[in-house]
Image (cartoon, rainbow, N blue to C red; front, side, top):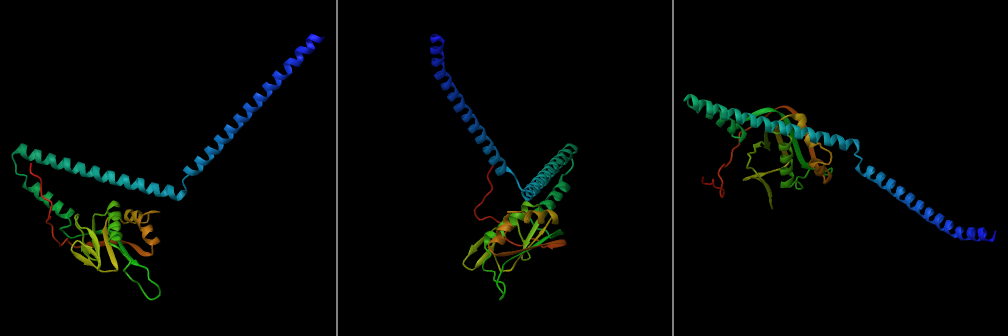
Length: 248
């Protein structure tokens, strides 16, 4: 009897220690599970996109798809032109007709020919008080940013205050206002762009986009879709002062 009682007394501390170990282990597991659940919930909340943001992303995806299709169409056109040149050379014919068509096309792309078509008109000015509108707040980068937005939206031709833009036309600020190339602009500013009116409007009205930023700093940006816009041909210098073609 004394032997078994002594053994039982020796086993109790060991059981007690194992119970403590198991309890601490269970607490550690529970703490890790709770931490993981909270972390997963926080990640889901941070990565959840609101409905409006999803719509904005859908617009961006559509725009990228349109840009890809436009580039693919350009590649197909260039391949077709190359094929026509090769055929003309193989048949011993002159490629003058094809070259004339290409010249007319690039004449149009460079803005050297008047164009017309559907598009949008954007009016930019500073919002004044009851006394009227003051245009001192519009900066050169505001106009440049709007032009870039319209081009990214697929604009095929753009004019500012009735003057056509070329691919090399830039905007800069000086003490007296805004210069578009060598031309001084006066507000209010009206930007006419030819292209798909809905695509251009969607690009400009993109949530969190450039136009929303202009409005947040007190500028008035009015966008109106037009069934037909006529843009004049570009009238300005086409020569470069510093750039020279590289020699083969």
